[in-house]
Image 1 (cartoon, rainbow over the protein chains, first blue to last red):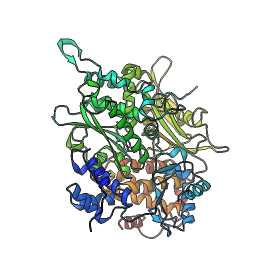
Image 2 (tube, each protein chain N blue to C red):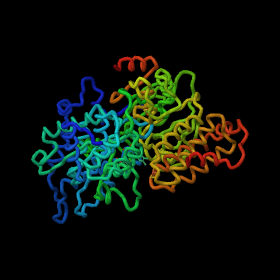
Image 3 (cartoon, protein in one colour):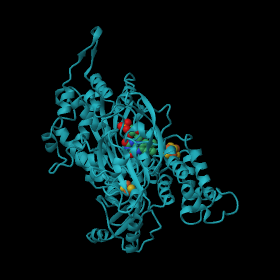
Image 4 (cartoon, rainbow over the protein chains, first blue to last red):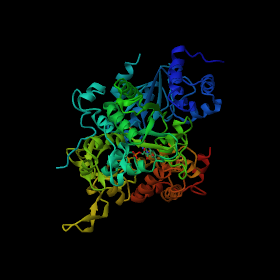
Length: 161
Length: 471
Ligand SMILES: Cc1cc2nc3c(=O)[nH]c(=O)nc-3n(C[C@H](O)[C@H](O)[C@H](O)COP(=O)(O)O)c2cc1C
Ligand code: SF4
Ligand code: FES
């Protein structure tokens, strides 16, 4: 039931907590750190964070269900986020999302996170990524791509090993 | 000829300009901070003195700087509301959530010139007796957060942050705090709740004005990235000089984000009010016009929450005539000067200064359906009119775009939107209803045509929406 948090990560987390006069403030930053390490936020992770911050698990759980970036299931090694919002839509992001979905055998009508059967890629149709002038845009994990044509998407995803 | 005027983004795009501190300092970086920290108390009449902090706040007031985050509220006035007698610590938060659809200006500063923001923040913190400040950056800027952390570390090493900054006796720490994908975190009280480690549920005002009851119920200043950068320039050039940029009640420069169906989308820094909406879209120095063979249909002038402008719309505006007297003249929407007050006079707003251009190839109902889906997704859910209404509007619009619309839908949309605005805790209620109200009003025939394509279903028109939203 317990979470195996490596020492270096715990040290990083302890340092983050010092940034705030009240521990609870660190909860979103801790969720990021945990999700980056484990790939998702498990029930055990919620309990671990709660005890670290002297909170009740519900105080952490309600954040996981509120903030769209947190997930309770593992995702693919590469998470592709395609922007759905107006400027990107005018620039063809609907078709781009559709193209990536069909490439991976996923349902393009679904906007939420879905993972391809090989477990390598997950795709999500997200809201404005604040780069509307270079539509359509997408992110793969932390990296950001602008003016993504279908060919470019194929090429970028081909390089994800 | 209308031209860009680069103040904040002057260096950012120069070849070889990098986000590290050496580059920033070799371009005059942190000189404004040194200048601010060296200000001496000034004697005024009656043997009273003005502290250096008061003098900086005066400069900001004189500059006429208005917030660049959305509401365009006077920065000097906002700072003057801060409760300085409570004995509680005062916090400064930089709003780097940049999540209003269409907006991508803060991204440029954060990724290309993070030290400019850090310097602006240190000066603003000093001026307001702040010893702990945060940068709340949206979760989808992971590299931006890294760059800011690096910048803060570099500033710490040089003694611009930490204890006794440059021997002035002033202490300051700044931390980067990441959001996690929720638009409502851009709303300042939602942001504060989020920074306290809670769901980003906006607080009701009154009583929770951040200047009095903000972070941890202490006085708090929330300013946008670009606003805080402007402070650095105000100190460098003086408030009165800054106020000469732009136009009288709309001073300084603003970075405009231009997107949608124009030839050259991008970010353009202008003197506020010196360039018109039409020039931003059509002039070769800016958007460069529409694609070949296309004509203009509509423009969203200030982020997706702003009311849409229809091509050809005319407005009556007060303008000074030859003798300097104000007279009412008819102005085409393209001739509206791009500033806070003119767009407000035209019934819309410059908001986050994000212009989204639509040509005659768009289906206007599709466009509104896209916009409304955003608000349906992003409502925080605290207020019933917003939580339910945003979903109902989105539902009705999806019905219209998928050929299942009803004749009454246009009216139904207006009815819901009217019942959201003014009845919610935060301005998101207006943000979600204004696009609907304006699109439906100005393009009514298109909404009705879509609705008329099928026979109305039995029963109340809003039954389906209500039932599904409640699911
Ligand atoms: C729904 C909503 C979303 C907002 N999003 C942002 C945002 O992403 N960035 C921002 O700076 N201000 C945003 N604001 C405005 C802030 O509430 C606040 O007014 C602003 O950060 C104040 O800074 P300024 O005075 O420097 O403009 C938003 C407001 C609302 C109502
Ligand atoms: S208006 Fe909407 S977003 Fe704002 S507090 Fe109410 S439910 Fe939340
Ligand atoms: S609309 Fe896609 S980045 Fe803004």
